[in-house]
Length: 295
Image 1: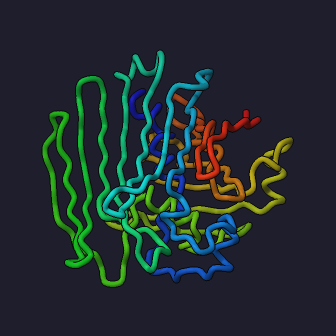
Image 2: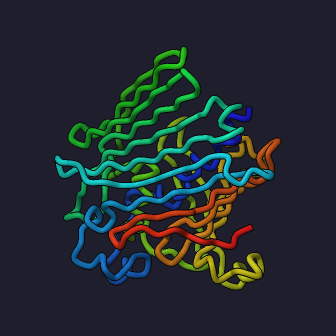
């Protein structure tokens, strides 16, 4: 059970952008709308050019363990003009010892479409390593045939695979690809008080995640004495069984560039609140250490 709970925030770094998986049939935003959620420097740049080389590092902790695990997400251009997005998270120290130094790795291989205005997933992979055990899975999309194929194997479990249809006029974003689409303004603007019912990638039928961007008044009341450190406060409700939570509640703090600075997965069974804090970032502007006063 420790393996599952301690790693919750690493998956939340994938999920953070539940806002990410908004319906793919939503219209593209104009340049003026995009500026509300991106730096003005993205004018004249494709989505890949804008984000290429960006990397974030998060400390993950619970109880009195402030650094029980570490998570990283980054994006880099490949030789074939595609982009590789990588998310890794691994337990450390004493927690690493009792969890077999668990490490989860996610890869998204994406291409630019619509003249560079958004990413589209070509292949999404997941690798989980616990001690000497490894499990693999992938999903590969074929938009010429309008199908996607998924497969999972390893760690002594039964190998499974299937090919599914993609509905007409639909684009499926994996979560970490959606992270960049969301921040580039593909899905529309984030506004105070706005609510989203977000459909997730098909698994066992269609499911959705509820997201609310809190008003500034609500943010100030809850985050006193440091509300200015958070530009957007998002409350998210997910399936309680996904992370072993009693409520399914997740709180995410974004800055004005829609970088998730701080994440709290609340009310996990046996562990209470599990927190992820951004500590380092690298972008085209260079390397920067982050100093936050979140408690």
